[in-house]
Length: 562
Ligand SMILES: *Cc1c(COP(=O)(O)O)cnc(C)c1O
Ligand SMILES: [Zn+2]
Image (cartoon, rainbow, N blue to C red):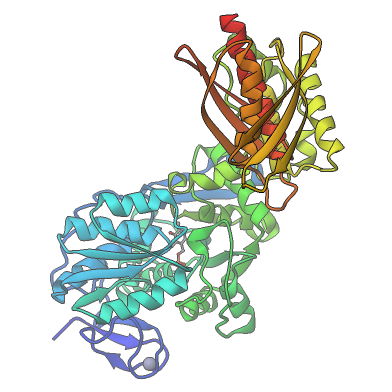
């Protein structure tokens, strides 16, 4: 006799775990584990539960002093980002992997957007069972690195998470494989959150704010409290608060409609909660009803603001999903005032540094020169970098104060670009500013390009004519090349060889926005006597950008060797 049964949450049918641990074979509903007896020790649906060998200590429960003072209410955090893989998923993975071993599976497989993949790869590796992970092609590099280091097979699939999920389900049937995911045995592991919390804090929180994707973690936390309450370990369950991004909120929408909602697709920078088809919607609805809970949404900019506020105020760097609870608390402070609030901080920020990189003005590469460094700090750019985090850039960038000579270079650039009838996108402005910071305003130009023209010839070659100015005189040169760039640079080389012979060792073009009128940054690398220098220039005109970069690199070499 087993000490538990696996029941359907909707039709109550008893399911055989050797046949399914995902959906009810009768009605397709989600499953839940029922124990024959209440116990004041946490119960797992395992024949021989061993303690989790990768997790010896509870995650920290911390009072957030600065935020509590700022918002005039008790705010605490449960640091789930301290779990071994950097995310709470480990609690559920521990049970899933032991269950896979118990059932004698040959391997574990799962589809994931990253965190679950990293967690399952880690436990599967430790417990010596092969692991296959299906991830969408655009999964964060850090999360894939975690899967790789734990020796799992990474299957990067064209398409989104749903595509991976479908394929992985088929794969699971192709062998004796355990299909892991947001299913019934994961919930059993993740409920340890609530038991652990009750051990740490004998008196209860009034509200627990949880970032929700599929709803599995929310359901697990609720189930943990319910089982603890049945065993007399607590009298009341805190109000459970479900928070989702506005742009990915089928669960919140479903709670208001009181029926499951599935979105076609969802997109949010909080990728860990981007779930269009929330498997455990019914468990969230039950948890909200049972605890008189609430459901809130927050905007993308709310998420970024709270992500930064948590870092700056409390020294905690989380991934964007974990900013949802604080954002919801701030937006609904009247509701939360006077409550003891617990924020569930589900995962570490180091897993998704790309979000920060995308939302901060990039740091230009500066010359190895103290004057340049002081100039950069004096420009106010670093202050703008911190003020502009997550905000629209267009107005911010006009506030950079260049030194007078740099400002001249910048305006010169803008003038030339405007003459071509182009207005800059924010990203292009940034690139231009980076370029200007890097410019040496004292650099003397022995040659300057005045004009150029190109003609395609019948034989497929490109004929070009380049006009430069040197020592107040004008020179013209022609050249036939295999392409426009090859042709004009060839012509220019003929002119500069007479002054100082140089060799073109590399060239590169970076186009900064879609469309035909994009700003192009050209990088030209020239060498003379084994000295290699690189210079960059920008223009909406590819050829002009390349010519100007050449002229600049040439000027640097000329200053050293003439
Ligand atoms: C998986 C995950 C969530 C969402 O959990 P669900 O169980 O899908 O609701 C939230 N935050 C992080 C960091 C996660 O990895
Ligand atoms: Zn059923």
